Image (cartoon, rainbow, N blue to C red; front, side, top):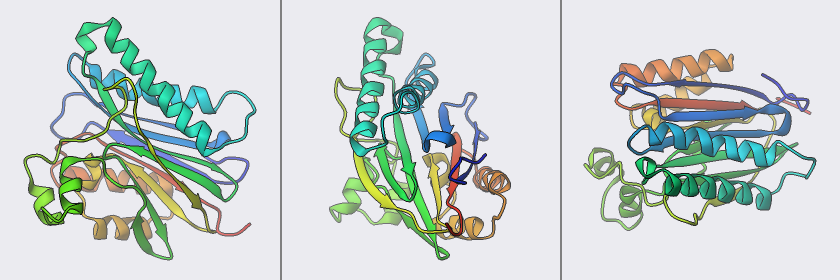
Length: 245
């Protein structure tokens, strides 16, 4: 799919090889420059509901109306999504404790903002080099930052699923929002940990470098994660800026 600005986007989500349902969800709103990926959690189908409702709430806030995109609007949309989930769980006890990670890209022209809550990620492929643009909000990521674990130890830790922030768990949420200035040909990938825990960054970089067709690249990434075990749901969303203005 393409927007008027000729940004290309493609996305794919798969339940993987182990899970019986897919608790990931994504939204692509190319014409408004909004892209969202969520990874839900919670019993009684709570994770499935949380990821879908959060992504839809962000889309509803940012893809309706004529207000210009901004970091403030993105933050407000995530807060609205958090409030919607929290209030839903208060009304329905079976959904208590449901929540979701969230990573989002809001772009207009070459200017953009990247937001994340939890351990879903945004990567940039520029000039053949892959860079992680987000910081995981997880227990093991914090331990790595404090020097208590190596990255390799974190990948094998039994606590690697513990996240320190999520949308919908508490009455308020703190999202991390960073500005981003795109360059011609930039490729951004929003993804859940079902991809990044199975496929190392150097392999991700190689697959992204070799992929011209975004839909086929999404399929290749999903296949790589499933070939490595596919222990979790897997979602990837690719956004490519035109090579030149």
